[in-house]
Amino acid sequence: MMSVDISILKLGVKPLGQWLAQLSQRNTEDFVRARDEMFREWIAELHRALHELVPEWEQRFNGLEAKINKLGEDPQLFRLLDNFGYEASREAINERRRLLAHAAAGAMNPDLTIAQKARVERVLRELDPDDVILLHKINAMSDASARYEALVASEASGDSLSGSGCIRTYSPEAYDAVTVAHVTTLGSWVLTMCTSYVRASQHMPQ
Image (tube, rainbow, N blue to C red; front, side):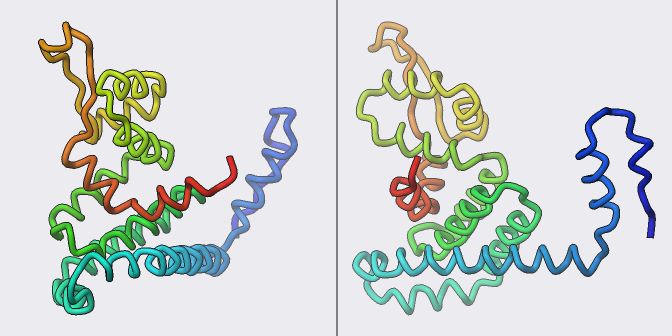
């Protein structure tokens, strides 16, 4: 196994050398064990999200179990869930892994087609949890110009939401060239699949 000579790091910051040495000493077994534990935690979060969503779906959909069984007949659904799991397995940020678990749970929602769900999964690769929360807040606003102001006020999330196609900005003539913001159909799909995440985040301590 390769060893690292900490003394070669002439940075005057000893922890950096220690971390590099620790990284070099991680073997495949340690790496796999750590990733397996993260995946189990991710599955547990997915289960918690479904536990919240299913009672709501039972009230909304007649014959929910039959609809879920129908979803399960499509192998594309399981490839989609694999994609969520893969993204979560390589994600460094805990909260973003949590977001992906809730979105994977949302993939069981009969409201959306498999193509729409797959589109959301691809878009979520570009979004952070804060982006999704901002999207929810903007969607709840009735004033179109206020939505744009909220978008601009949060530069990083605003850029992500606009660039991903979740929000569209424009200046209609009726508003005297005042720029407004509109949550797109794609943005509404994202919110549908992230319903339980947004709801849970609203109850988290700030």
